[in-house]
Amino acid sequence: MIKTALITGATSGIGNATAYKFAKHGINLILCGRRLERLHTIKKALDRFTNVHILNFDVRNKAEVFKAIASLQGDFAQIDILINNAGNAHGLDPIQSGNIDDWDAMMDINVKGLLYVSKAIIPQMTERKSGHIINIGSVAGKEVYPKGNVYCGSKHAVLAITEGMRIDLNPFGIKVSAINPGLVETEFSKVRFKGDKMADATYKGYKPLQADDIADIIYFTISRPAHVNIADLLVLPTAQANSVTLKKEL
Ligand code: NDP
Ligand code: 8X3
Image (cartoon, protein in one colour):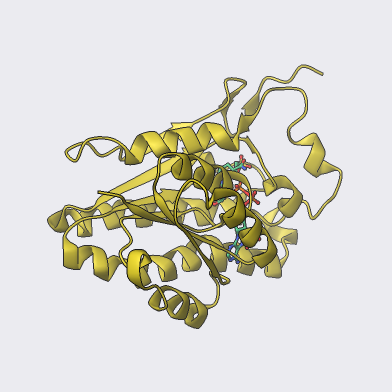
């Protein structure tokens, strides 16, 4: 049976690479993001592999999230796989000088946005007693690093919510997985450092993970047999030992 996956944050990085990977395996796609032009471009590129539908909304906007997901019809009404990927870090500052707008963005997008999207989709999964939810956490959800405070808090919350989902959805046979990457070269640092030169420096002097590496793992996770759930994975570049230990050749 052909499955349908909804991917948030499909306009760049990990979500985008996952969309391409899934399309090549014939999975129907619902691609979400705020940058509509990019969604159209990706749909155009993937239409020859699979059926693609785009949903243009901001995960922070509760009403938009529910309206967008309620609008799904026909082949796209049933969501078998939910990839909660939309998210970013905003800033890297000590708690005493952190920016409140950055804090709001991280909690509203990474935590509340994930909850809104999940709330809009979980009822159809419990009804059918099937489904797979993959939440993209981070090494930052496993350990806190200097100046990571609120971003780490948001990703710790994602991990706790993932574990809670796995417990509560257990009676329904719904798989819930956390994929927690370390440093991945995407637009992530451009967003975190607002285009500052720190953004480019983040991935210099070592070989970071690429979005495609994580997409491979996400595809592996969703393609296991029905009785196998990859519950929680930490994936680091070889050069990275933990949040604060990185072997750089300078
Ligand atoms: P990118 O910046 O490349 O991608 C982020 C995606 O999230 C974009 O498609 C963006 O789409 C979407 N997004 C951001 N804000 C919103 C919003 N308010 N509403 C809807 N969509 C939104 O970064 P990554 O691919 O690296 O990040 C993907 C996930 O991976 C995030 O959850 C991140 O925390 C996590 N992660 C990243 C790591 C890294 O080193 N890169 C490591 C560990 C985890 P648009 O702007 O079009 O809305
Ligand atoms: C992204 C990885 O180390 O920048 O979640 O927090 S890190």
